[in-house]
Image 1: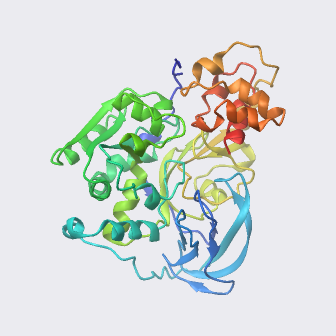
Image 2: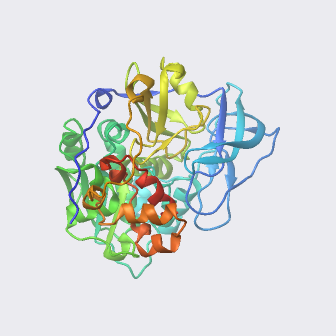
Image 3: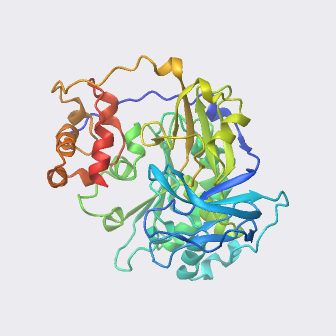
Length: 429
């Protein structure tokens, strides 16, 4: 049985900072693909004028999510840019801001009074057309996740407000500041899933968010707000399901097959915005933390270059050793600060050179077994690592690398500083 490793949090300053609206970029770099699933292709061309919210990339396949313009302006080029979602350069649409903030026609939306009479397929179409994907990091199209097969009875909706990443506070601020919108979003998801019981799960350490959630959801039927002790790893959907409901999903199966859907609070917030306000997903809340003058939470347009965000917040790039997006344990170290913010960028964490220069060098495995005992899904990270380094991906598959939740705990505890998580992730992909 895994021993959950305690990972210290660095949230005290950021969690107290209200969400701040970040200015629109002068040039938005919108990656056409930020989702798991089918590849999008541009629906516009160089020289076209676009408006805020206009669809600019899409795919015909079911498992897909379109992209929309976050600003109004002119498409000046379409070429590759570094994509932190896939850790490689991919196609991006460059839009020069005209400063007019011209908005396009809103998506089809409904009123809250119309929710009960609206067909599920119409709700799913709104969510799909809004380009909503899992904002907790997975990036799976939400319209597909919520289209549960008719023969699968969903008994419980777990609203994931754990936010386990040690530097991230964006979800916490959403729970504090946009609680009423979360109630609206949960009502939509609940209808789509056949009215299951709802458990809003968060950490007891989120002392400002807990009473706001309890008050907001107090009148919702068959709904509970559960503030409890959760480890970092239990922020993962499967681990949360086990921690809260007492059972885990067998290897090779999905949580819905066990009667449970877990949905992140940021995603639910986006669902409410789309369904009731007609807003596509063109911005998100992200945490700026680490070695920065002032940790904070920012509402940023998708496609804003990371360097613009750092510069505007007095972060000197020359003093940084690395910039990590999407969480220090599950995220990605940027290859270039020119990389744009994506739908999956839950945080931007900076590390100064003087804080990382003494990092221990990699050595050979000392056979301590810490990675095995720490793995929350009971894998053998070192065995998978050895298989990957030898190019034996068949063996890695036999070792159930596909069950990895990419939490990074194995690398965190490894005294040899081996890139265990990276190699297991490679095998998983």
